[in-house]
Length: 352
Image 1 (cartoon, one colour):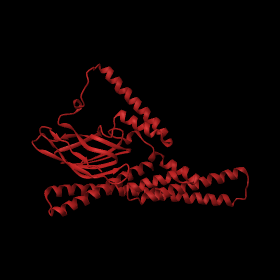
Image 2 (cartoon, helix red, strand yellow):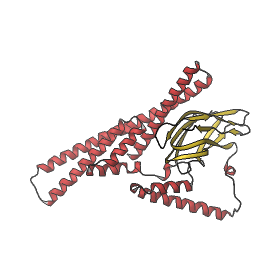
Image 3 (cartoon, one colour):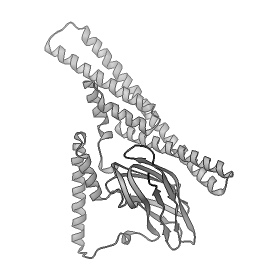
Protein backbone atom coordinates (compact mmCIF):
# COMPACT_ATOMS: atom_id res chain seq x y z
CA UNK A 1 0.00 0.00 0.00
CA UNK A 2 2.77 2.58 0.65
CA UNK A 3 3.76 2.32 -3.03
CA UNK A 4 0.20 3.14 -4.07
CA UNK A 5 0.23 6.15 -1.72
CA UNK A 6 3.44 7.42 -3.33
CA UNK A 7 2.06 6.92 -6.84
CA UNK A 8 -1.22 8.59 -5.89
CA UNK A 9 0.58 11.56 -4.33
CA UNK A 10 2.77 12.06 -7.41
CA UNK A 11 -0.17 11.69 -9.81
CA UNK A 12 -2.22 14.23 -7.85
CA UNK A 13 0.74 16.63 -7.82
CA UNK A 14 1.23 16.36 -11.59
CA UNK A 15 -2.52 16.68 -12.26
CA UNK A 16 -2.95 19.81 -10.16
CA UNK A 17 0.24 21.37 -11.54
CA UNK A 18 -0.97 20.69 -15.08
CA UNK A 19 -4.35 22.24 -14.27
CA UNK A 20 -2.59 25.38 -12.99
CA UNK A 21 -0.53 25.52 -16.17
CA UNK A 22 -3.68 25.27 -18.30
CA UNK A 23 -5.33 28.06 -16.31
CA UNK A 24 -2.21 30.21 -16.65
CA UNK A 25 -2.09 29.57 -20.39
CA UNK A 26 -5.76 30.51 -20.75
CA UNK A 27 -5.14 33.72 -18.82
CA UNK A 28 -2.29 34.58 -21.18
CA UNK A 29 -4.52 33.88 -24.18
CA UNK A 30 -7.29 36.10 -22.79
CA UNK A 31 -4.81 38.92 -22.30
CA UNK A 32 -3.32 38.57 -25.78
CA UNK A 33 -6.75 38.12 -27.35
CA UNK A 34 -5.86 35.38 -29.82
CA UNK A 35 -4.97 31.74 -30.39
CA UNK A 36 -1.60 31.55 -32.14
CA UNK A 37 0.16 28.35 -33.16
CA UNK A 38 2.41 28.44 -30.11
CA UNK A 39 -0.56 28.61 -27.75
CA UNK A 40 -2.41 25.79 -29.50
CA UNK A 41 0.67 23.54 -29.40
CA UNK A 42 1.22 24.13 -25.68
CA UNK A 43 -2.48 23.74 -24.94
CA UNK A 44 -2.72 20.41 -26.76
CA UNK A 45 0.33 19.06 -24.92
CA UNK A 46 -1.09 20.05 -21.53
CA UNK A 47 -4.52 18.59 -22.30
CA UNK A 48 -2.90 15.35 -23.45
CA UNK A 49 -0.83 15.19 -20.27
CA UNK A 50 -3.88 15.90 -18.11
CA UNK A 51 -5.84 13.09 -19.78
CA UNK A 52 -2.94 10.69 -19.23
CA UNK A 53 -2.59 11.48 -15.54
CA UNK A 54 -6.39 11.31 -15.06
CA UNK A 55 -6.31 7.76 -16.46
CA UNK A 56 -3.49 6.93 -14.06
CA UNK A 57 -5.48 8.35 -11.13
CA UNK A 58 -8.53 6.31 -12.09
CA UNK A 59 -6.48 3.14 -12.06
CA UNK A 60 -4.94 3.93 -8.68
CA UNK A 61 -8.31 4.76 -7.15
CA UNK A 62 -9.80 1.56 -8.53
CA UNK A 63 -6.97 -0.39 -6.90
CA UNK A 64 -7.62 1.42 -3.60
CA UNK A 65 -11.36 0.67 -3.89
CA UNK A 66 -10.56 -3.04 -4.20
CA UNK A 67 -8.33 -2.88 -1.13
CA UNK A 68 -11.08 -1.05 0.77
CA UNK A 69 -13.53 -3.87 0.02
CA UNK A 70 -10.97 -6.46 1.15
CA UNK A 71 -10.32 -4.48 4.32
CA UNK A 72 -14.05 -4.22 5.08
CA UNK A 73 -14.41 -7.98 4.66
CA UNK A 74 -11.47 -8.59 6.99
CA UNK A 75 -12.88 -6.11 9.50
CA UNK A 76 -16.28 -7.84 9.48
CA UNK A 77 -14.60 -11.19 10.09
CA UNK A 78 -12.57 -9.71 12.96
CA UNK A 79 -15.71 -8.24 14.56
CA UNK A 80 -17.50 -11.57 14.28
CA UNK A 81 -14.49 -13.29 15.86
CA UNK A 82 -14.54 -10.79 18.71
CA UNK A 83 -18.26 -11.34 19.33
CA UNK A 84 -17.81 -15.11 19.27
CA UNK A 85 -14.90 -14.92 21.69
CA UNK A 86 -16.82 -12.75 24.12
CA UNK A 87 -19.81 -15.12 24.07
CA UNK A 88 -17.69 -17.93 25.49
CA UNK A 89 -17.80 -18.11 29.28
CA UNK A 90 -14.09 -18.60 29.87
CA UNK A 91 -11.78 -16.51 32.03
CA UNK A 92 -8.37 -18.22 31.84
CA UNK A 93 -5.11 -16.68 30.59
CA UNK A 94 -5.45 -18.17 27.11
CA UNK A 95 -8.88 -16.56 26.79
CA UNK A 96 -7.48 -13.15 27.77
CA UNK A 97 -4.57 -13.46 25.32
CA UNK A 98 -6.93 -14.45 22.51
CA UNK A 99 -9.17 -11.48 23.29
CA UNK A 100 -6.20 -9.11 23.27
CA UNK A 101 -5.00 -10.46 19.91
CA UNK A 102 -8.48 -10.07 18.40
CA UNK A 103 -8.74 -6.55 19.78
CA UNK A 104 -5.41 -5.60 18.22
CA UNK A 105 -6.41 -7.10 14.90
CA UNK A 106 -9.69 -5.20 14.99
CA UNK A 107 -8.01 -1.87 15.81
CA UNK A 108 -5.27 -2.21 13.22
CA UNK A 109 -7.76 -3.18 10.49
CA UNK A 110 -9.90 -0.18 11.38
CA UNK A 111 -6.81 2.01 11.09
CA UNK A 112 -5.94 0.48 7.72
CA UNK A 113 -9.48 1.01 6.43
CA UNK A 114 -9.44 4.62 7.65
CA UNK A 115 -6.21 5.30 5.75
CA UNK A 116 -7.47 3.67 2.57
CA UNK A 117 -10.74 5.58 2.58
CA UNK A 118 -8.96 8.88 3.23
CA UNK A 119 -6.47 8.22 0.41
CA UNK A 120 -9.23 7.25 -2.03
CA UNK A 121 -10.88 10.67 -1.60
CA UNK A 122 -7.66 12.73 -1.62
CA UNK A 123 -7.59 15.52 -4.19
CA UNK A 124 -4.05 16.83 -3.76
CA UNK A 125 -0.54 15.83 -2.71
CA UNK A 126 -1.12 17.90 0.45
CA UNK A 127 -4.07 15.63 1.32
CA UNK A 128 -1.78 12.60 1.15
CA UNK A 129 0.76 14.40 3.33
CA UNK A 130 -1.96 15.11 5.90
CA UNK A 131 -2.92 11.43 5.91
CA UNK A 132 0.71 10.60 6.59
CA UNK A 133 0.86 13.13 9.44
CA UNK A 134 -2.34 11.75 10.96
CA UNK A 135 -0.92 8.23 10.80
CA UNK A 136 2.26 9.23 12.62
CA UNK A 137 0.65 11.37 15.33
CA UNK A 138 -2.36 9.20 16.15
CA UNK A 139 -2.59 8.80 19.95
CA UNK A 140 -4.42 5.46 20.00
CA UNK A 141 -1.54 3.14 20.79
CA UNK A 142 -2.75 0.00 19.06
CA UNK A 143 -4.08 1.77 15.97
CA UNK A 144 -0.97 3.92 15.79
CA UNK A 145 1.26 0.86 15.66
CA UNK A 146 -0.61 -0.42 12.62
CA UNK A 147 -0.69 2.99 10.98
CA UNK A 148 3.03 3.45 11.52
CA UNK A 149 3.69 0.06 9.92
CA UNK A 150 1.52 0.95 6.92
CA UNK A 151 3.12 4.35 6.42
CA UNK A 152 6.71 3.39 7.25
CA UNK A 153 7.80 3.01 3.63
CA UNK A 154 5.96 6.21 2.68
CA UNK A 155 7.75 8.30 5.32
CA UNK A 156 11.18 6.70 5.16
CA UNK A 157 13.83 7.92 2.73
CA UNK A 158 14.80 5.48 -0.02
CA UNK A 159 17.91 5.38 -2.19
CA UNK A 160 15.74 5.70 -5.32
CA UNK A 161 13.81 8.72 -4.05
CA UNK A 162 16.56 11.14 -5.16
CA UNK A 163 16.92 10.79 -8.93
CA UNK A 164 19.84 12.69 -10.39
CA UNK A 165 21.72 13.21 -7.13
CA UNK A 166 25.40 12.40 -7.02
CA UNK A 167 26.94 10.09 -4.43
CA UNK A 168 28.20 12.96 -2.17
CA UNK A 169 24.78 14.60 -2.37
CA UNK A 170 23.06 11.37 -1.37
CA UNK A 171 25.45 10.95 1.56
CA UNK A 172 24.65 14.47 2.76
CA UNK A 173 20.91 13.82 2.50
CA UNK A 174 21.28 10.48 4.28
CA UNK A 175 23.14 12.18 7.14
CA UNK A 176 20.34 14.68 7.62
CA UNK A 177 17.56 12.09 7.35
CA UNK A 178 19.46 9.65 9.57
CA UNK A 179 18.72 11.87 12.54
CA UNK A 180 15.07 10.78 12.30
CA UNK A 181 14.45 7.62 14.39
CA UNK A 182 11.95 6.19 11.91
CA UNK A 183 14.47 6.39 9.07
CA UNK A 184 17.38 4.47 10.59
CA UNK A 185 16.72 1.10 8.98
CA UNK A 186 16.26 2.47 5.46
CA UNK A 187 19.28 4.75 5.98
CA UNK A 188 21.52 1.78 6.76
CA UNK A 189 20.31 -0.01 3.64
CA UNK A 190 20.81 3.07 1.47
CA UNK A 191 24.23 3.76 2.98
CA UNK A 192 25.33 0.21 2.25
CA UNK A 193 24.17 0.59 -1.35
CA UNK A 194 26.10 3.86 -1.73
CA UNK A 195 29.27 2.37 -0.23
CA UNK A 196 29.05 -0.62 -2.57
CA UNK A 197 28.49 1.63 -5.58
CA UNK A 198 31.39 3.87 -4.58
CA UNK A 199 33.74 0.90 -4.21
CA UNK A 200 32.73 -0.38 -7.64
CA UNK A 201 33.33 3.00 -9.27
CA UNK A 202 36.67 3.54 -7.52
CA UNK A 203 37.79 -0.01 -8.29
CA UNK A 204 36.87 0.42 -11.93
CA UNK A 205 38.88 3.64 -12.14
CA UNK A 206 41.99 1.97 -10.73
CA UNK A 207 41.56 -1.08 -12.93
CA UNK A 208 41.34 1.03 -16.05
CA UNK A 209 44.70 2.62 -15.25
CA UNK A 210 43.40 5.99 -16.37
CA UNK A 211 45.25 8.73 -14.57
CA UNK A 212 44.01 11.78 -16.51
CA UNK A 213 40.88 13.64 -15.42
CA UNK A 214 37.90 13.59 -17.75
CA UNK A 215 35.43 16.38 -18.25
CA UNK A 216 31.74 15.61 -17.81
CA UNK A 217 31.13 16.45 -21.47
CA UNK A 218 33.36 13.48 -22.40
CA UNK A 219 30.42 11.26 -21.48
CA UNK A 220 27.94 13.01 -23.78
CA UNK A 221 26.93 11.31 -27.00
CA UNK A 222 26.75 13.00 -30.38
CA UNK A 223 24.04 15.65 -30.39
CA UNK A 224 23.80 15.85 -26.60
CA UNK A 225 24.52 18.86 -24.38
CA UNK A 226 24.08 20.04 -20.81
CA UNK A 227 21.88 23.06 -20.12
CA UNK A 228 21.98 24.70 -16.67
CA UNK A 229 18.85 26.24 -15.21
CA UNK A 230 20.18 29.32 -13.43
CA UNK A 231 18.92 31.19 -10.39
CA UNK A 232 19.95 34.73 -9.52
CA UNK A 233 19.69 36.13 -6.00
CA UNK A 234 17.97 33.19 -4.33
CA UNK A 235 17.64 33.89 -0.61
CA UNK A 236 15.99 31.45 1.81
CA UNK A 237 13.93 29.51 -0.73
CA UNK A 238 12.22 26.55 0.93
CA UNK A 239 10.42 25.15 -2.12
CA UNK A 240 11.05 25.91 -5.78
CA UNK A 241 8.84 24.37 -8.46
CA UNK A 242 9.04 25.14 -12.15
CA UNK A 243 8.12 23.71 -15.52
CA UNK A 244 10.05 24.20 -18.74
CA UNK A 245 8.51 23.31 -22.09
CA UNK A 246 10.43 22.57 -25.27
CA UNK A 247 9.67 21.26 -28.75
CA UNK A 248 9.82 17.46 -28.49
CA UNK A 249 10.22 17.24 -32.28
CA UNK A 250 13.53 19.10 -32.00
CA UNK A 251 14.78 18.04 -28.54
CA UNK A 252 14.66 15.06 -26.24
CA UNK A 253 15.03 15.57 -22.49
CA UNK A 254 17.17 12.80 -21.00
CA UNK A 255 17.90 13.53 -17.34
CA UNK A 256 18.56 16.23 -14.75
CA UNK A 257 21.00 16.60 -11.86
CA UNK A 258 21.40 19.18 -9.12
CA UNK A 259 23.60 22.19 -9.66
CA UNK A 260 25.88 24.10 -7.32
CA UNK A 261 23.07 26.16 -5.78
CA UNK A 262 21.08 24.14 -3.24
CA UNK A 263 23.57 21.30 -3.41
CA UNK A 264 22.13 19.57 -0.33
CA UNK A 265 18.47 20.20 -1.19
CA UNK A 266 16.16 17.37 -2.21
CA UNK A 267 15.44 17.51 -5.92
CA UNK A 268 12.80 15.64 -7.93
CA UNK A 269 12.14 15.90 -11.64
CA UNK A 270 9.87 14.49 -14.31
CA UNK A 271 10.49 14.58 -18.05
CA UNK A 272 7.39 14.04 -20.16
CA UNK A 273 7.81 12.77 -23.71
CA UNK A 274 5.58 15.58 -24.97
CA UNK A 275 8.31 18.09 -24.07
CA UNK A 276 7.60 19.08 -20.47
CA UNK A 277 10.25 19.16 -17.75
CA UNK A 278 8.93 19.54 -14.20
CA UNK A 279 11.39 20.18 -11.35
CA UNK A 280 10.85 20.49 -7.60
CA UNK A 281 13.67 21.47 -5.23
CA UNK A 282 13.13 21.55 -1.44
CA UNK A 283 15.32 22.47 1.51
CA UNK A 284 13.97 23.09 5.02
CA UNK A 285 16.91 25.38 5.84
CA UNK A 286 16.46 27.44 2.68
CA UNK A 287 18.27 27.65 -0.67
CA UNK A 288 20.43 30.72 -1.24
CA UNK A 289 22.88 31.76 -3.93
CA UNK A 290 23.40 32.52 -7.61
CA UNK A 291 24.26 29.97 -10.28
CA UNK A 292 22.92 26.68 -11.66
CA UNK A 293 20.30 24.97 -9.51
CA UNK A 294 19.63 22.16 -12.00
CA UNK A 295 21.57 20.91 -15.03
CA UNK A 296 19.50 19.22 -17.73
CA UNK A 297 20.80 16.80 -20.33
CA UNK A 298 19.22 17.26 -23.78
CA UNK A 299 19.68 15.61 -27.14
CA UNK A 300 19.05 17.34 -30.47
CA UNK A 301 16.90 14.97 -32.52
CA UNK A 302 18.16 16.40 -35.82
CA UNK A 303 21.20 18.62 -36.41
CA UNK A 304 19.31 21.29 -38.29
CA UNK A 305 19.69 25.07 -38.23
CA UNK A 306 16.86 25.84 -35.86
CA UNK A 307 16.62 27.48 -32.46
CA UNK A 308 14.53 25.45 -30.02
CA UNK A 309 13.10 27.60 -27.20
CA UNK A 310 13.16 26.52 -23.54
CA UNK A 311 10.14 28.27 -22.02
CA UNK A 312 9.10 28.58 -18.39
CA UNK A 313 5.36 27.85 -18.14
CA UNK A 314 5.00 27.47 -14.37
CA UNK A 315 7.02 28.87 -11.45
CA UNK A 316 6.33 28.82 -7.72
CA UNK A 317 8.76 29.64 -4.91
CA UNK A 318 8.11 29.59 -1.15
CA UNK A 319 9.99 31.63 1.45
CA UNK A 320 11.53 29.52 4.26
CA UNK A 321 10.93 32.32 6.77
CA UNK A 322 7.32 33.26 6.07
CA UNK A 323 6.09 30.24 4.03
CA UNK A 324 4.58 32.75 1.59
CA UNK A 325 5.09 32.92 -2.17
CA UNK A 326 8.22 34.70 -3.40
CA UNK A 327 8.30 36.96 -6.49
CA UNK A 328 10.31 35.43 -9.33
CA UNK A 329 11.09 36.73 -12.81
CA UNK A 330 11.86 34.29 -15.63
CA UNK A 331 14.09 34.56 -18.70
CA UNK A 332 13.52 31.78 -21.23
CA UNK A 333 16.43 30.06 -22.92
CA UNK A 334 17.08 28.27 -26.21
CA UNK A 335 19.21 25.59 -27.88
CA UNK A 336 20.60 25.83 -31.41
CA UNK A 337 20.05 22.27 -32.65
CA UNK A 338 22.75 22.57 -35.32
CA UNK A 339 25.67 24.09 -33.39
CA UNK A 340 24.46 23.03 -29.91
CA UNK A 341 24.99 26.58 -28.69
CA UNK A 342 22.51 27.52 -26.01
CA UNK A 343 21.18 30.30 -23.80
CA UNK A 344 20.51 29.03 -20.29
CA UNK A 345 17.02 29.72 -18.87
CA UNK A 346 17.18 31.79 -15.67
CA UNK A 347 15.00 32.55 -12.64
CA UNK A 348 15.65 35.92 -11.03
CA UNK A 349 14.58 36.53 -7.45
CA UNK A 350 13.73 40.13 -6.61
CA UNK A 351 14.73 41.60 -3.22
CA UNK A 352 12.04 41.26 -0.58
